[in-house]
Amino acid sequence: MSGSQKGGAYARALARELPLEHGDLRAIASRLGLQVREVDADGFDGALIRAREIPLGTIAVRQSIREAGRKNFTLAHEIAHFLLPDHDQTELVCTKSDIGNWGDWSRELEREADEFAAELLLPASAVQPIVESAPPSLQVIEKIAQRFHTSLSAAAWRYCDLAKQSCAIVWATNDRIDWSKRSSHFGFPLQKGAPLQQGTFALQCFAGTPGPRKPQALPARLWISATGFPEAIWEESKALPAYNSVISLLWIKS
Ligand SMILES: [Zn+2]
Image (cartoon, rainbow, N blue to C red; front, side, top):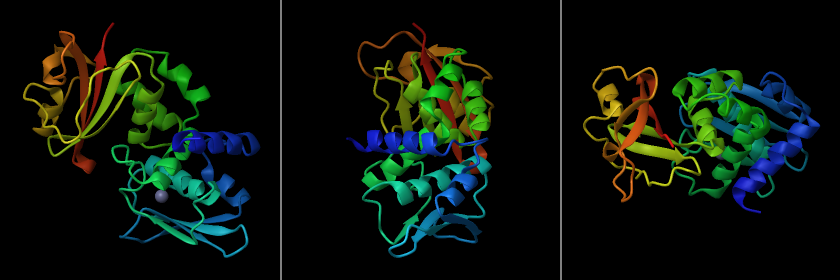
């Protein structure tokens, strides 16, 4: 079983035993024998401290995490470390870049924990109908983040994980692609670290000009350099000043 299958399978098994109501992970943590504490911390976003030889533990979550959705995702990620096999260090400390770091899954345990958290908070069976209810847009992704009490980045990642349209999410920081997630039908590479091109709404957002409120057509070459690309790509971008980032939805209409 690969990491992603393992994380997802454990999340589905947990959801069958302890259904998640209104995104209330604290109730689930409590049933699992986990105390949740919000703490003043600089060095980490979430941590799991286990009791030795008995199935109890404490999850510490950094109090100053700005969004409730991101806090909830962090909690789900730490629950994963408690439940998943081979995650059984006595103490696990996860920094901001360990949790929901969709661009770098070089660390197997963090990847498994993120997959678990994404499936627990954003179950495919509940999210898929929303993904298919409307054409791709950031509005749909924001709706998913709110309804399922999770971060915008997790909702965006999950959206493209499930979408049947040819679309992709790009998260850019400092005018460059930080990470991207392509739907299975989006067949063109988007290079991590590549600079955003002049003419994209994403770069305009970094310059302080608000992006369009729904996807707009642009020459596809602004985003895609691979051969065989179509003439137009639809882009919607939004600045996220608190993260010094811009999120973009790309869509190739069929
Ligand atoms: Zn972790």
